[in-house]
Image (cartoon, rainbow, N blue to C red; front, side, top):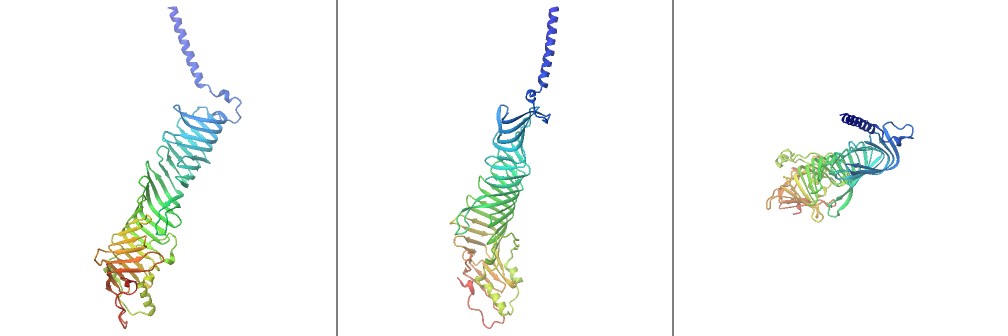
Length: 456
């Protein structure tokens, strides 16, 4: 009995000693020896400071990061590392990695959180950025910057704010953003060749979802020769289809355009413009790139135009000269031309540039002193190789109609005008109608239409 009691007492003493030893282990500073002789002013939170260190970071036995560090501060709880003078840093997520360098950075192993300080650099195959600050959260694989970022992004240079980038999918959201980069531009005119041009794209926001779809908000893009503006746009990099909804505005040197929606099938080299399409062809003497209001063009029927047209009256020599301008092909490129349609489908591949204009297209040209000419047709055909625009109706039917402010009212099977800047000619086929004359003219006008209408 006494022996048994002695054994129990020894066991109890052993348990108490074990508990006390465990408490000592848990409360003892593991860096106590290293902290002896530490520089004065070292924070009480810092367990140890090391110089010239190659750091490796592990999670569950797997290497997730490394860096060359000028100074390393390790907090007493061993969860937080503070890096100074970081070079050749690497952090690896489950599905990707990025590299970093910075005057200062911190890593919290408890939250798997890496913070890169101001003046840092972050890069991988998608980007190479200077940042004012960035945080990578390992649990979500999300890299987020704060403030201004500059550098390379998606094959171009960027100046933007507030980037959120997923390391696992490559998805991102950024904005506002200014991006400058090389974009392949197809040939549009006969004499052109496909080429790579530098574009500047500004947007309130840009994003790429998981996969191949990119989105833009309030975007404006220019290459110095054209400017494109749209409230919303998207690009599917897998199908190579760009889509913008509007109103979409296009400003060029020779023409401006507005529509509700544009879809560009880049692999097919085909563009489809739909909804309230308005095209303004600029006069030869005023061809410059500028953002300006595209005037509304309310489609009208010929009867409405005829009803509001003034009756022919006696004219002075100056007025007769102005009237002659209405009938002359030499003035087609002298004044702006407005064209309205519901749909334009355009193929822009070199050697097959053409367009089909549908949705009851019509064109109107305003001349000085309230004079005008107006044209209606069921559809139009643009030939970019020959630089012509032909307005046509059904075969054998005179469905193309031309009216002028001086009283002319003509119909034809088709009506064609040259679109090249150096050309001022036009022609028509199977044309008939009325060519007005002044009430006090001593003799009737010559037989048949005058001027370019005479080209049959």
